[in-house]
Amino acid sequence: MAGMVKGRLALAVTLLAATAVAATAAEPPRELTHRVWLLSGVPDAGTLTALRAAGVDGLVVPVGRVEVGDVSSRFTLAPLPDLHALAGWPLTALVWIDGADKASGDPQAFVSQFAPAQRGIPGSPRLLFAARRFFPGLAGFAAGVASRLDQTVELAAPAQELAAHLPPRGWTRVRPVAVALGNPGALGFPASMLQDDLVALDRLDATQTPYRAAVVVAPFARPTPGPAGASLAMLASGETAVYAPGERGDTFRLHKSVDWGGVEVAAGTSITVETVDTARYHHDLGLLLRPARPALEGWDTVGLPAPEPALGISREAFLEYLQGGSPYPLPRVVVEWAGPTTMRVALANPTAQTSALATTGNWVELRFAGTEVRDAQLGEFSGMEYGTTGAGGAWRRTAVRGASALRFYLTVIPPRARVAGALVTFISRPRGVETRWGMRVGDGGTVTGPLEGVALTKR
Image 1 (spheres, rainbow, N blue to C red):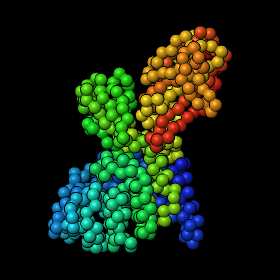
Image 2 (cartoon, rainbow, N blue to C red):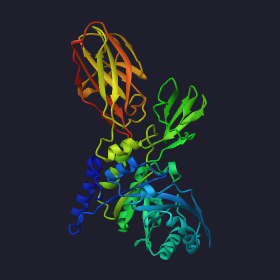
Image 3 (tube, rainbow, N blue to C red):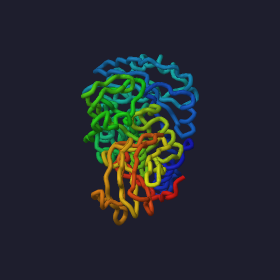
Image 4 (cartoon, rainbow, N blue to C red):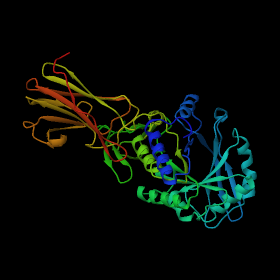
């Protein structure tokens, strides 16, 4: 594979290559390429260096949009940032395209209108059209532009619509880019079910037409946060908002006004968010890369994540993962004796990864023997239960007197954060204390930490 993709991501690609080789025997392993769409401008030099080191092979730069009529094409150039920092990168110019019915536009007029933008991009950029909805004249217009430019152009559209319209031998000089998995609704693509996207990708594979896949990681939020950036951690406190999971995304009804990335949102307002975290991205890439997909040429990450604070996957978490890091937070329980029978409990997360939002899915467990709890205080945690653990660590709620364990809950495990303040006082010094943690992650699964003993001598 081109670049230096490492760790879990490299494993996914290796599995794909190995399966493809086993299936075809005569063909050498293919090198899948990874591009990133720069939807929010050109990043700083440090980020560009990190992207290259993480195995990113190319960048996609938005340059405008075109409206396609029956015999007309109207291209509107977007304000272009300074692109000199992208010199040396393989670049692709992104043009959003709108049209209806059988309108196939005027390819020659578009080529003339597009030429100044093309000259303003370093190198020899490729051209990528992106359509949020497929319309019958779309492929004809793209093919006409490809003919006049004398080069292959790409056409991004929802995977299910591409699978329904792609002819058996594909389109002449038009390379499909299937928008699938991730969070397509954040950019106005139709929301889709995971299984329907996988069926569509299988249909594209069956045509044997080379194609790419595009996974949207951009977040959706209503109201839109300001430019200062916003995170879910600021909403997770029960003092700030009431959290409610939804079928698509999560909702927070505010108890008090908040600074939402530089925009004040009043108390009583609801904030709705739908995000992709690293665990979800890892899961989707596994579904995309691990089966034998002989026609797949690579994948696009649609939207370079914002730096912390960020909604969903942050830039730091994205780069950490691409360079071989875990897609999940790796927290540790920190216990300190505050007195002969009193201990402080905290959860520290040194990674850039975050958990999913949950009411009881994120927890710290404290097991003890030979004593009872006299008092327990939440600190920064959102809730607590008394219980016992059975075979395999199964949790069962109990009354205080019958408890041999405590669970402290938190709505989310933020990146690079420490959730602290829990204080547990026992009637007498316990004979033994053990801790572990559990969390809900963005792919719908759960991750549990190891059971670890706590030193019984006060430091």
